[in-house]
Image 1 (cartoon, rainbow, N blue to C red):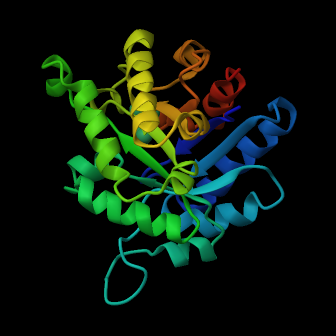
Image 2: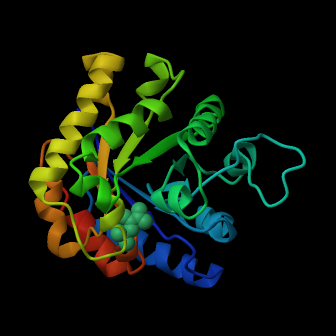
Length: 253
Ligand code: PEP
């Protein structure tokens, strides 16, 4: 059975002291609330990773990085490598977030290079895919996301694929307050899992968690997370307040 995974993406928010306070409040709230099959993770900004790592060292919260370099070391000013992330205790890394794709021009090939590197360094990649509003209106949503997934997984072996987390995040739903309908989210998650079956096998597809992201909040979390096709959530804005993040976690089955 797949674990349910709830990940908070803090983006470019929080100074160190705020990050420590936030994760401390989350950890304290979790102690009484969580089912053992539930995995909770936070993705602070790079500047707070070490402080957050120390704060969660005796909790079950996993540490996630929001991005990483496509190189391991060398003359790459401003970049952070998988080795440096591992050194801080990072276990997972978000790759291909729509803000990276659309603001910073990251393409499928670049994201695939990072994903292969993350796997080689034993970091769990959280591969984000998602269509724009124009693509959804043109009835291309499923094709676009399947293509992003297929390209992101290029050269990934069946054994490696089992360790990947996928996040379906419609671009038009991120930070907008709009959420995909349960019907649309289910259809996408089914299509992505089918791709894993055809590319790998049923066992691999059954093993991979496919999360939903895009304006997940306490009011809509239960509806989304109760779907058998949705294995958790990637949460942006609502993960910046311990109370709302804990409410989302508490609504997981
Ligand atoms: C995200 O950043 O991945 C995200 C889904 O943001 P929000 O929940 O704010 O839409």
